[in-house]
Length: 357
Image (cartoon, rainbow, N blue to C red; front, side):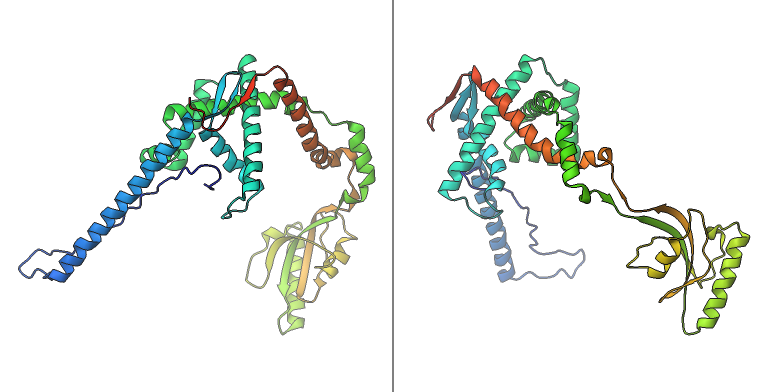
């Protein structure tokens, strides 16, 4: 977690295995010298000191978190937004302004803080609107998310540790999930569900960028490939024999008996990569079997399985590619409009820092 406004440090207690010596059954036990015993006691003491320091840091972090929860920085229609929530929101926003591992400058911190607070106020207004509209996630849906969290962390012990490090109880976790679900559902209804892109706008963009929507040719073939080797004549003879076998099997290349002298594969034939095969396939139809084709690597026999020449995509085909360009700005515009509506009659107080609940 980046240090932005207040420090909420999570202590990770590392268990260090300590080997103080080994004893063996029998009459010839290994002797442990006084120096070794002294060294072992010193190592144990060092670990104990480390654990004590880590426990102290964890307790300080917990007290800091609890204090932050009591520090109210804003109220939205009487609902408190506390410092703990602000710090969490700031750390989400921070990635827009600060690279991983860097410290935010005072000016940048002010920007992050302002944006995080505005986001929290909007989210609270949206959640309150969801409640007003009767959007209530079912307990089963919330329990399902909790179960997924348990499964993701791996064990009950890891789950408890996860809650502890996040300064949460299971009850507060469920409340966060409920709040998040309400926010998702109300924004889906009021933002994403109310955005429509003008068809004419998309058509104009399609005509302007038409050359970008050309589907490349797609030639796919089953390829029987024989390496030429040192004896070109022998390789040519073998290729002719393989071609006869394919024709006897109704042009099914997969019925060939593999003897290690050739391979059968599916390939996409490109003009630059397979010039000789490309020249052959341009005059063939789907299902056609070629004669033996020689190229720089060896001999090929191809059977065309798909042949789609390059073509211009229609507007309907290109529509799904065009929409995102206009959809995101339209969603942002709708969100701003909705936020203005929510704020219009809302009672929003931004309090001086340090206000206690």
